[in-house]
Image (cartoon, rainbow, N blue to C red; front, side, top):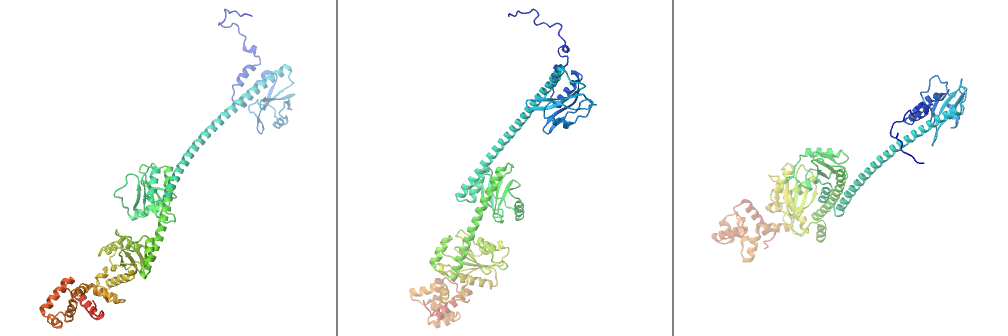
Length: 569
């Protein structure tokens, strides 16, 4: 069949049939309205209102299926007889007759979709519908069911879309959290590995601050509890390092100690190393721009733990070393075998092969505790080896290589302790460990002489005691010989080498009270010969016979030489 072009194509149709003729019951127009509704209750209400357009019918009620049964749709015509909602449950999702007063025929039309029963529309009439009327009612119910199904489908799609969007949001959030956690774990692992390497290499404050600087990019430092700098890593190190007042330092420590982790104090983040409650040190990072984040705080907190372990280990080693050193000097003061002393001294890093001095310090009003011992040790610190130190009663005893420099130690201690009212006794040279007990007695003797003199504070050297060296208790023949050798040694050696009698001349001179004539007569020599000998004595001994103390020491020395030592050369 061939289609020929019409000469009326593209022109308006004439006399179109009106819509009312095509759709006398308005079902097509209603379907457009039903399928445009988004609310299921509104769809049911529209369908109920259209029931009366199909014939002598009345929509008594509308229901929508819910999870708990059926929910009546509000908005049906007023004056409808009461419907027993419980009767709807008895239908068992099937269409069926419902009994209503004053109604000859009432039927529950089920609204169904692909998922099952969606609801009901109750239609009543004075008589049952014929075939055509039943077809129209069924068509209305079908259109309503389709519109409800479409709305349910669209709602489900929207819900699925919202759920999908929510799941995607949760997924993205979870992925971001996972990335953050992965990043945090990586940073934490980096901190752990870095500090573990520091510990494996022996630790140390410098290594910890350097590691913290590399981890955070911020300058790191360690101070002692008094605010003194011990280690710095990074740029902009202050020079000189600022000194804080003790009041400010204690307040800062108290403030930080009250918090659980690192605390910001001005331009610093500060953490305290206090493994057993005692503050052993302060670890801090310089953060003037306040750029520190959680990673920085984490690194600082873990570095503080490493520092606390390091400082605790150092304290324990120091305490063990201090105990061993005290035991060593205590045994040396009492007397111990030389080989054992050398071995023990080497174990604590002290060289007993060198010359030593024994120093005894007493400061009235200051108990010989650890703080006093530290003050004495600091005051006697020199470039020499660290001294051995112990306590004896209310005195501190040191065995040191360096002979104290006149009153320098006393002045340093007076400044440290706040009072000059203290005394120090210093022994002669000690050449071997077995001479330590003797030198200890010498230092005690020097201290005793100082404390019983008119000027009770200061430093006294046993070498300078002169006659007082042999006037105290406990002096034996060896001490007397030492005194004689100190004052007459040169003259005795000269007499032995030149067969002269200078010591005897000096002894007779003193015995005669320094009278030239009497002394010359006692020696059976001429007065000029006596003058010559006395001049030679001055030259050889390098002593001033006109000095009162020198004359006294020389006179006592000649008496000891002549009476106690029997004039032995």
